[in-house]
Length: 97
Image 1 (tube, rainbow, N blue to C red):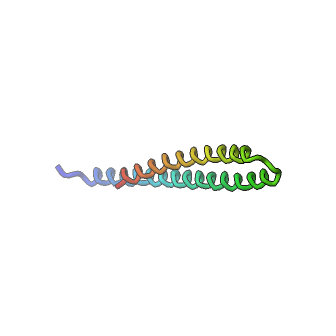
Image 2 (cartoon, rainbow, N blue to C red; image 1 turned 60 degrees about the vertical axis):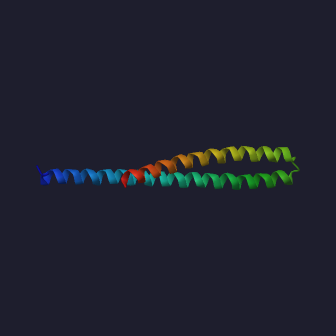
């Protein structure tokens, strides 16, 4: 038996609601990714400022390397979070296709 008009209307409304949820989720993920990219940029800029100050103060290469390793660990963590969010974003895109 063919679907009634109301059945088609309910299905269409459900599709619209699902699309809106996907749009909201993808927008949030994109904002999260952008925020994490900003944190990476900030960490690298702060490292540059700190290294400059360390060199001015005559710090050893070991101190400077230690500062780099600390920032590098943070950047690696941010990049892992970005990769996870990009995977979620791809999944949302694949699900809505």
